[in-house]
Amino acid sequence: RYDEHLRLRGKAGRTREEYLRYVRKVAELARVDPATLGEERIRGFFLYLKEKRAYAASSLRLAVAALRFFYNDFLQRDWRLFSLVRVPQPKTLPEVLSREEVARLLGSVREPRYRMLFDLIYGCGLRVGEAVKLEVRDIKRNDHRLHIRQGKGNKDRVVPLPDALLEGLGAFWRTHRHLRFLFPASGNGNAAMSASHISISSAQHAFLTARRECGFKDGVCL
Image 1 (cartoon, one colour):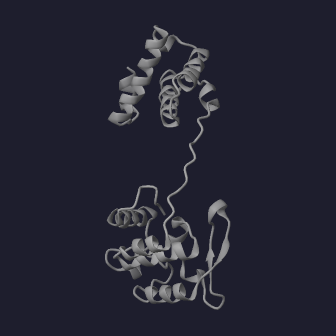
Image 2 (cartoon, rainbow, N blue to C red):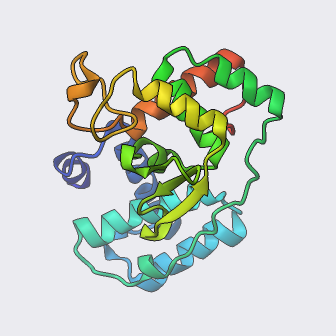
Image 3 (cartoon, rainbow, N blue to C red):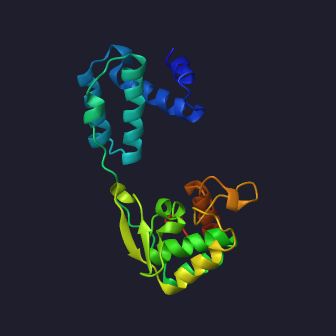
């Protein structure tokens, strides 16, 4: 019945397998129907996985998700335990490229709109979500600055805009002349008439394509 519940709730095949595996693991350790166990026994199960079996953070998160779905969603127990369990996120340092590697990466981007976008992200220290939303009004030509609207924490900020990037943005804008967006979506072949800016996902896809072409590691990201 739990497997049927997972299918009705739209869980993918691999997710269903993992969720069922953790419920079976509880049953094997407790030697009883897992539906008859109380909150304290499941608390002890998490401690067992963490302290005795030294489970990795990703495996612990999966165990919590699987048992939360079994007890709270399927059996409707409404246990507070699952909101109390904290699995530390391992801290890893990002891959840092040299100037030469950045130049090689940007040079491998063939589509002009993405090349300009990535030049701007690296040159001004922008997040990809900030860069794709930039509007024509955000370029402060006289001050050589960019106005970033509702960035991290929904706060505005102003960043310096080097001369080379200012000129590059101007030349790129003249290729589409959109009245609002600096990076409009393709708009069925007519970017000037597009109703929106390019998406974050499309920018990330272009970046991943360039990264693969250069042979850089997965840790290199926007």
